[in-house]
Figure 1 (tube, helix red, strand yellow):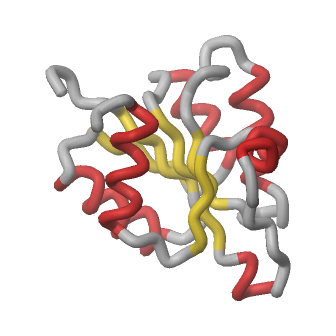
Figure 2 (figure 1 turned 90 degrees about the horizontal axis):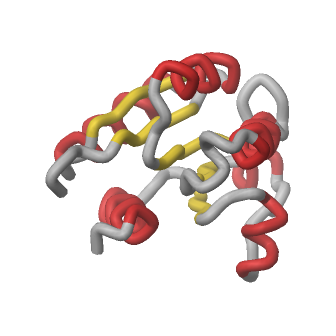
Length: 133
């Protein structure tokens, strides 16, 4: 990577933001964080990220879906890969796990991870989605 890719992590859990920021920075990425979809859109307006990792459940149960839709609908970010992460299955017993590429497409995301994230799998998926494999 000649220029470091910018990863935006969106989550209302400060510990999650910090842990994954450190993991991705150690892997050679620049990382910005946001604690809400509103903050995320402000960050995106300042600098378009190369990839977004967003929590599903923040201020609303479907905050991550709403953010993903907004990013996909904006021509500046329509092609930015999005990874959805969630603990909704363990927290609420709801299962949003995509079972096909069509499921991912309908969720407006490129990948999906249950929390806690596996650092090796996360970095591998980020590199894959950025074409840095």
